[in-house]
Length: 213
Length: 213
DNA sequence: CTAACTTTGTGAACTATTTCACAAGCCACC
DNA sequence: GGTGGCTTGTGAAATAGTTCACAAAGTTAG
Ligand SMILES: NC(=O)c1ccc[n+]([C@@H]2O[C@H](COP(=O)([O-])OP(=O)(O)OC[C@H]3O[C@@H](n4cnc5c(N)ncnc54)[C@H](O)[C@@H]3O)[C@@H](O)[C@H]2O)c1
Ligand SMILES: NC(=O)c1ccc[n+]([C@@H]2O[C@H](COP(=O)([O-])OP(=O)(O)OC[C@H]3O[C@@H](n4cnc5c(N)ncnc54)[C@H](O)[C@@H]3O)[C@@H](O)[C@H]2O)c1
Image 1: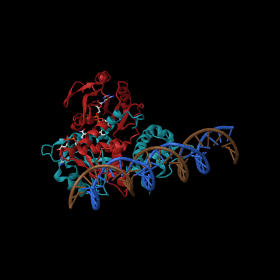
Image 2: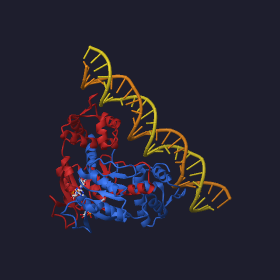
Image 3: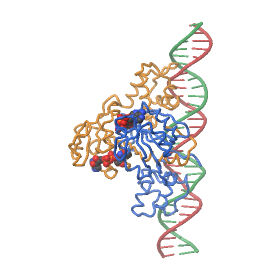
Image 4: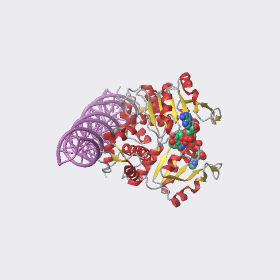
């Protein structure tokens, strides 16, 4: 199969979210145009994105909502449960560990880890903070493929190496650090400072066209 | 001036971060190649990005670190302080309100707002939670141009409209909702579910080339 | 001062992504 | 079962973004 652009995958997630809404409301079909308006894109984009994976619509009618949600979940790998570990029981880690949105989507947090002796063993939200010393063996036992990194930048690369050594194959990092991973591992970084600085740039340079999501 | 790509602006932020490091270490100059390695890109990309804004380097030598940081701060609009309001004193709002990284970069949080009577007026981190009823007038008085949105999706668009009415010109949203803003307002959305689903897709479809930051 | 070497700045080439535009397919209705 | 009105699926065109490649300019050493 052809390489799928990251932008396409992101839109698929968005389509799925809105299709689920429509499905809940009992709507049977949705046209590419309706979906595009809900998701802030164009109908051609919707059709092109979906066409990479098959032919899901009916001409003259649109896409069957319920069926398409199932297809998208399949495509995105969301028909299964993914085990996730969180590293860093700090402020960001706390928000994430208790975020319902993840569980709803099939991401189950199987452990939260920290290296601060004052935090280890203490109850924390619905979970208990585990010792970093147990991280690798726990990941191996649970076969958790995904890790969320919520520690300061300094140790980010070292912890990432440890995670990968233990078998983690996908990492979502919140540390504002440049991290490198081998080719078989996926890494996404969320860097809030970069987002804010992007807004600062836009305000400063008063770009003519804006309003992008 | 030509329209600057979002990807370029993001990289500028990254260059700045690493240049500041080098500056702190007392390094005088840095080549595009060195910067590229630090930031996970290519030297041609670094030179191209910078060339949109001027000619900052010396051939044969590289870029003057201290000078270039100043230029980048200028370009990104970081020479000034930006006032920021946070809407939503929940888990994500809590993490953000106390995040040192923002202040360091010149983003000063001038108020945190919520509509929950149990939270309003209570101390919260280093601040006090304000009533949503005061939001618009406070923004007008303070002339805060940036808002961070950390409330559930349901009310996101309504609150955004209120913010814009009060004069906010840039919004960073954490609500996983499609929000529309008029052309003179900048909007960035951080959607963690989309990031995780992107990882799920990558794991499921075992893409051949990965490891992107 | 010259030669060898380094590194920038930038058009041009290339690659990726989005948009266009339309034939083909499907439904509904008569 | 034919007609009209929609809407998909998709090559082709257009636009956007990245990489190449090299002349020009600066540095260093002798
Ligand atoms: N708080 C925010 O709003 C925010 C926003 C954007 C980015 N971030 C980034 O997220 C990361 C975490 O931020 P935070 O505000 O939650 O910080 P925090 O200080 O509240 O939490 C960090 C936690 O990580 C733990 N830790 C440190 N080193 C560790 C290691 N080597 N192994 C295991 N645990 C370790 C600490 O004990 C602490 O509990 C930082 O990189 C920060 O820059 C935070
Ligand atoms: N917690 C996370 O890790 C996380 C991750 C990704 C996205 N998000 C998103 O961020 C947003 C906030 O999440 P959270 O976990 O902090 O939720 P939360 O429930 O902890 O906090 C939300 C806060 O917003 C307030 N609020 C609700 N409606 C409001 C309104 N109309 N005006 C003002 N305040 C209002 C509530 O009183 C509450 O204090 C949600 O959209 C969520 O989907 C959260």
